[in-house]
Image (cartoon, rainbow, N blue to C red; front, side):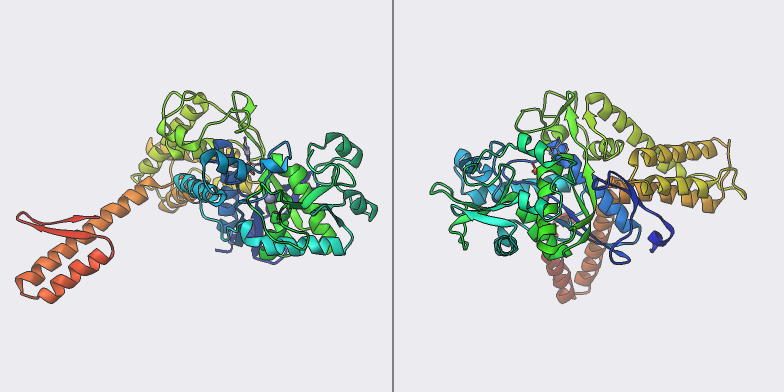
Length: 493
Ligand code: AMP
Ligand code: ZN
């Protein structure tokens, strides 16, 4: 499918502050990097929203026919707490709290993250690199920045020299629209103030104090990498010095992404990213969802109904549909009412898809299905406008009901286009899990196993015990156990 040749995709680029027509660096392929989770605790529902926005974008880009290399990292080292104190590395702090090795903390919450993504039917990224797996690359980058005069060593730590960067004609603040004077006033990184030339200089490498457990050897002594550097190291390694799309939550624009721009430009003399995409926040009670303020809900608590905020449990598909009903660049306030409305809406869509199966085709169509289909693509091509797309899908549902009520007519071909388009957008692009398809699959599997049991019975009746044993053993190798009893053979899948 090479749909992209007939489609012009408009993306809102945070760097220019406007929508731009998307042109990939290499025709037909896209490199996309999205900042992954810091795996020192369970991801909250807000984190899930951001990752889901990029899952939808990944799905749509692939649907358009692009070959996408989608890199989403795991931050498993060097993430300081908000007060910037080295002793408060999140992993070290959590490992003390849980009496676990820092790497056990990493493993525990990486497993949890993957389980959550699986629950919400995410596609895996094509590469999922870890910060700790790329320490050498980060040391090399740091050295390169020192060699080029953009970084300096101080007390075993290495800092990026923001003033030097600006002196050489670049503009630290171009992504987040800040100027250097503002940054002087706003800096929150209190750690290492007396080591830095200027307060807004940021750490590329931090000297580890004796108490710091996660540490690596470097030319500057034992230490650990700065958070901003890991994304530059991994995106450059897997996507090149300049790649197409970089994504993440809005809150990462400054300082994290700003620092990535500076590191990339200082290293290579050109911008590391062509299109910066930022997803907006999930709020609850009108306030940003965040672990630090306690205003958060865990995804599993919403699904199990094990919380005090929602009146009942909600299926992961409903959560996904609710998120998709907001544009990825808009704030979404999660509420019981919003979830209930999404549940009803999704049910209406599913019911209409069933009705569509029994529609009676006519020789002519009174509705313009190709214009309707185009409007679905137009919505998605306009900076992934999922709320407009969903409004169009409901319009498609209205068509199905009108034809069913004999108020409008559609040809068999138009009925097929209408239902296929709705299904494609719902399941393939918005990522709603097709429960029917998966339950059908288990029915099919049961049918196949029953057929094999019949064939085995026949083999046994013919005294062909070699074949009957082969069927039993090969099923067992697939973890399907046959049990012979006096009432015949049963099986455990
Ligand atoms: P972190 O693990 O803190 O680095 O966050 C992982 C991702 O979740 C980042 O892209 C954040 O921008 C994003 N994020 C954090 N809080 C929220 C929120 N309330 N709503 C949406 N995304 C969020
Ligand atoms: Zn990042």
